[in-house]
Length: 103
Image 1 (spheres, one colour):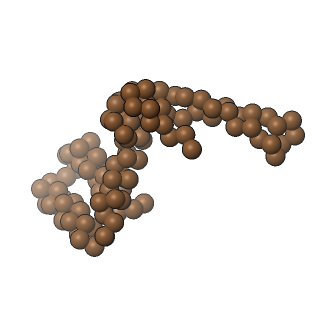
Image 2: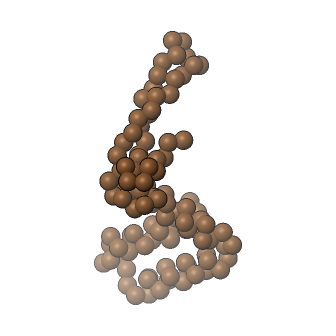
């Protein structure tokens, strides 16, 4: 896990479990964020990627923010197997902007 993903997980943990954190804990998390930003020349790009991944994990479109992704389907043919069976593959798709995680 890259440090930027840890930062996002820390923020969500504080949000979801505020009773487990005091002011000193919050200041430590913010200090850690600043330390990573100073040390890592790729911090902004990595943080952008981590936020993109978190949005997708939570079911939000990473491109436009829509919170109602729908499944789309494709079929992968397995030519390495006898009979060339097809496997149904699903992936999230945004009907608002057209983003999908299909590779």
